[in-house]
Amino acid sequence: MISVLVVVVAVLLQLMLVNRLPLPGGAAPDLVLLAVAAVAMARGPAMGAVIGFSAGLLVDVVPPTAHAMGEYAFVLTVIGFLAGRGLGNPVTTIVACVLVAPLLEAAVGGLVGEPGVSMAALVTQASVTVVYTLVAAPLVVWLTTRVKQVGAAA
Amino acid sequence: MRDTRRARLILGLLLAAALVLVTVDHRTGDGSPLSVARAGGSWLFGTAERFGTSVARPVTGFVKALVNAPGAQGDIDKLKAENAKLRADMAAGKLNAARSAELTRLLGTAGTGGYKVVPASVVARRTQGAFEDAIEIDAGTDDGVRPEMTVLNADGLVGRVIMASPRTATVVLLSDPASAAGARLEGGDEIGVVHGVGEYGRLVQFRLLDSTAPLTRGTRIVSFGSQRGVPYVAGVPVGVIERVEATPGELTRIAYARPFADLTSLDVVGVVVQAPSRDPRDAVLPARGSRR
Image (cartoon, rainbow over all chains, first blue to last red; front, side, top):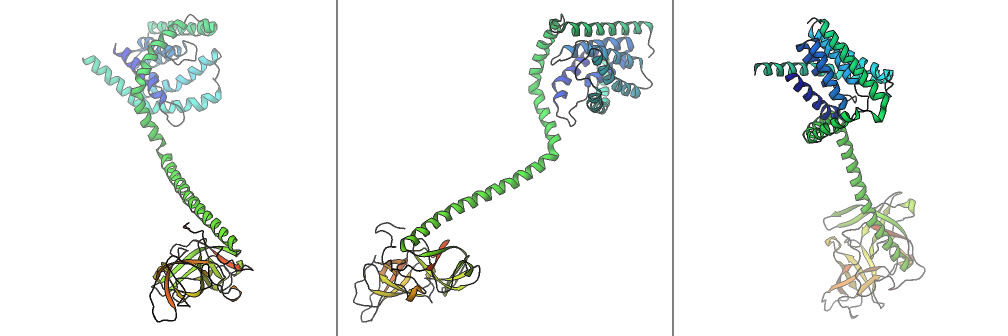
């Protein structure tokens, strides 16, 4: 229940606030990705994959959408599974998730022939997003685990 | 945490589901069965986003201000400099308009009398005590200005040039105690002499040579002119008699006149470089009743 709440809040924050921040570079951190990864790390691979799939579907239907439905669901399912399974320690897990996500997005987008998926976009746009997401990662992960602890105690 | 067979199975199923979704949505395009889900999400989250925008706006504005802060100081400085420049331009424009109007009037006066003038601006003024009243103008020998030339403005006689350098010239005003100019009563041939008495040019003394000639308040005087117009050309309005002194038994009569030209605030003046061939007599005087 707490996991669902965390993911929904992350999606809303991402769409209403973070995507509108006029940060230099024209990109913004991906809070949903971080929230999914943080929840999955606590809940294991099976639960992580399910939560990632749900969060991805949510992101896919929330306006504004210009991509085919299911793309984010695919990406976040993989991210949830990877984070739940764990790759070494938590830090390497998060970093790996953040780095893998844009590659997966590009791969799925390229698979269905999305316009705008190109090497140049991947290098310029995605790299800035990755940097912002890595910067935001400690805060989001700490917040998520904190909320879960409070929820478990209550 | 170790992944189990079950977890892998779930992962595979979900990925397959996602791919199916992508494929269906992509293949069917606008008529996609998933557009229902999308419309529902649109309605739900659209409402939430609209509500959240009012909450998010201050945060967005704050971050924007932070991000723009380094450039903002530069912008402010630039705008300030531009503002100051525009202000100065506007003041200069007003000044120029006023001077242009004064110059037009000066040329009108000069044309009436047939004087050929070189226009000039006052660049400095010297008023030491009441003993000396002189101005510096920005026309000199390069412009044809020579010593002992008449200086006037749109309203009347101002003084005469006593010294000319290539770019500037010094003018002794009518109000200087050392200046004396021949003058004539309007409408007649009674002549006298105008002396400066200091007082910053508010009044000049007029000494009428014929003590029996009628002299009343309000009579106007014009310059009488010297030989070949040096230093004063004839016919330039000098002033209006304000006060007549009773001087019984003297050979001359003394009156005080208010100069037509406001000698305390001179800006555009003209140096008469060539006198008219005929004495304009009273033609240059302003029409009766109109105060210039």
